[in-house]
Every structure is written in structure tokens, then in C-alpha cells.
Length: 258
Image (cartoon, rainbow, N blue to C red; front, side):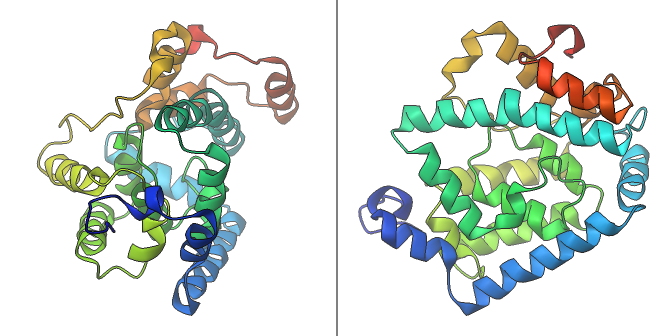
């Protein structure tokens, strides 16, 4: 994923080359289409979210299960108050266009952008998302992968494959990941998490937004799967009330913070 001078492709290639690389060849395009079909099937299955919540409850991550609507709107809050502003802040500090970064992510795997909670994503879509983005904090995704019996083991296997160049998405990921040490840190954390769920995660340090106590409270709330699910259960249950809240509440409500 790096040239002889150690610079990742994401930082040394021009826009057209990055776009072409993110799209990939026929095998990569087939993989994208397969994940789109898998995700469409999961969206149509009414029992999928309850099934995953039940497994995660047995794992100790769920106290009270939120409704499907609460999950959806909680996910939108996570995007607008943590994921999107943190990404803009990070890539601005890196001198990287956030718009280009988003485009490359969509071209590499469009499915990973349409399900912010991950509850309607296939296992490999979640894994691909973790490998695709230098995460603010990957612990949520690892906890979510425990809904699958082989989720953490498969994440470990695929990260190793990306690092040794044998993964089918190694080249397309190289068009997106700007941090040459990210996958090594991720692999170290995955192995530490397997040994001890309480192992400290590799939190992305380059965030100036943490000086804002409201953002810090939102980050703390949405960082972990249990924190996110507790937040969701505090939201209204009716669709009309959720839509009204989405339109009128434009700042993270610190009274709901962890």
C-alpha cells in the first residue's frame, strides 16, 4: 500500500488515479454488487435487528433494546454530531479534501455509507468499513461484530490479508486510507480485544473538536455500542416525534450523554 519512499497511495496519487483505484476491477465491482444485494436483503428482514440485539444482549452489550425507529434516528444523530464533524475536522487537519475522501469511500464500497449503525450491514461490510476508514475509535465496530460468531476472528484475518497484500480489496483500500500505520494499529487492537474486551482502543488523536465540551460529551456517548444503544432508548418512540426532533434539535443534548 506504500511506495518505496513510504508514502501511502492516498497521499501521492492524483484524483483520477485514486478514483480509478477505488472503483477497482471486475472482481472488486462484483464484490460491491454482492454487498449491495446482501444489504437489500437485510433491510427487508424484519427479524434481523431483533436477532442481532438478542445476540448482543447475551454478550452483555444491550440493557434495553431500542426500537427500529430509535436505532435509525439515533444513528442519524451519531452521524451529524460525531462522525461527520470529527471526519471534517480530522481531514482538514491532514490537508485532505473531505469531499474527495467521501467520494472514494462511496466508490470503494457504497453500502458502508447507507447504514451508519451497522445493524443492517453484512459482516464483511462492517469489516470493510473498519478497514476503510482511520477510525475515531473502532471499539463500537468490534462490539457490533460480536453479533456474528466469527466476527472478530474474521476481522483479524482480513486485516492481516490487507497488510500482506492478499486481500481482494487491498488495492482499493490503498486509495482511501491516508495513515500508513492504521492497519497495524488496528490489528494490534483486535488481538488485544480478543484477549481482553477492556483493552484500550486506538483513539484518533488529531481532533481539535475535543475542546468543545458538547462534542466531547457526544463522542463519549456514541463511542461504544452500549452507550449508543442507551442513547437510542432515551429517544421518542413515535415516528412523527422522531422526525420533528430531527428537524428542530440541532445540537447534541448533553442531558442524554453518558
